[in-house]
Image (cartoon, rainbow, N blue to C red; front, side, top):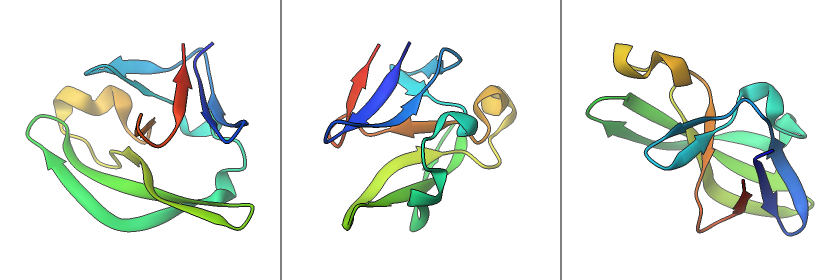
Length: 96
């Protein structure tokens, strides 16, 4: 089961990820302690997925900026990943 780990803690875990461009997109319900994921002011745009929004992680006195991204209103080609969350591989460990 794919999972996201930071400092030994599981941030997300699901058998229902969607892989797009080599990234696991996790269902929002798979985030552990979802209240620790705080919206960031960062955004970016993908030509075929649309505008991405980002999360900062605030947990145990530590903040990791822009640890993950998601598409709240994706273009038609990416509707299957709406609100699913992907993580930066240089900030977390992702186990398949």
